[in-house]
Image (tube, rainbow, N blue to C red; front, side):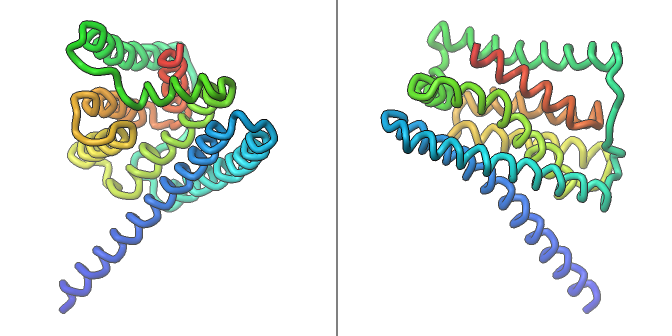
Length: 230
């Protein structure tokens, strides 16, 4: 009976964490949806401005909430000793190394697309179309806001929700699964492009465990998105 009760509590706790994490993801997608609506209404200046204003207010509240929840989570459970790693020449050099690795993944995929071995990612085509309709906000959002949301949700909160133990197995599974989910959010369905986005997610996951400071991940993600848009 005790074993059954323990198993039930574990399942209920796991289900609760699932709902909480999905909730963060939904809140992020709502913010993206507001920008998408503003882009679709770009020909109507008044409507677009109102939606952009709504997005900025929502973004500010969402960033404050996610940051607070992440810090609260670390206070309750922090086996990996995640905190603030001081910037140094060594850490900056390591950060550049991770960035070069991400660029190598994207450059390799770019070559495969250039030689028509793989199709251009549909996600990138959609972003290009949105940038044409509403240039400033569709350039600023993926560079400035998306890296913060995605690093908190896919790395920080995800790993501490579902892979709490600081063991090699849990760290490997956490990085691997979070990378797959990260890739799936950028690509619909199974395709070779899923591997590319997942690969970027794996590098970001490894960086999070290496630096133990989500600020490095945000900078790394920011640089990656900036170079992608350029």
